[in-house]
Length: 277
Ligand SMILES: [Zn+2]
Image 1: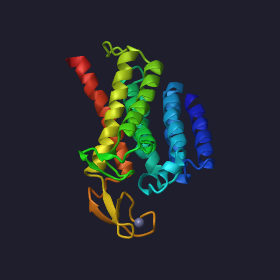
Image 2: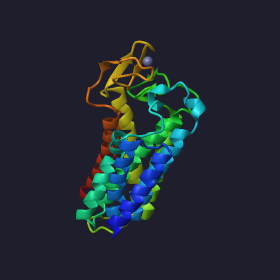
Image 3: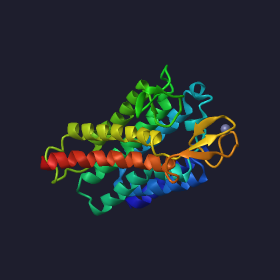
Image 4: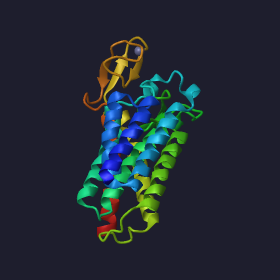
């Protein structure tokens, strides 16, 4: 019954997002799938976390348009997310919702789900609000190196605080809505510890995202604009781009997935610490 209700809700939201141009066709299908799993297996608490990420990132991607003008690198895909972006951002969270079906009474599925979402939420908030920083960002691997706004791997003070806020919002929701009381957890049932773990894990995930952007993410070069870009095979100007560094397979969608995975890794580290130390 809940699965059917989740399916209907997911279809409805995916359809509205498609109409609002937040998702393209493949993105809407992917969102209907992930939404069905998360709403249908998880339930309303899980739905609130997912929708918080989805709604705030959609709103932020439409905000501060003037500030984003000319910053084609991170923002050129427009508002419409495709299936790759949906799975890159929400794939791991969906997997934890599916695991909740097999481990309904254990809290780690909820923590993994929340950390995965906190990480991509932190990353999105940091990217979208980072443009408000008055100064250009600096490379995360070399803070003395100033780079253009929108450069992968660039971080700023406002962007990092925005990431922390985005992560903390998911952390607060994860702490106040956590649906199970778990036998494994010692002291973990306290909302404060859930809040701290999820928030820090999410922030760490978003920093890891920047780190990958600065190091091994596939980067290309556009000869027309004489600049580095994530875009391939064509730059936003239409010119074919050539790879200059990074791992070819590690595109932006996989970097987002890695961002959420690193958030989950943060939770695993925290749990091991609490259980065994
Ligand atoms: Zn170009």
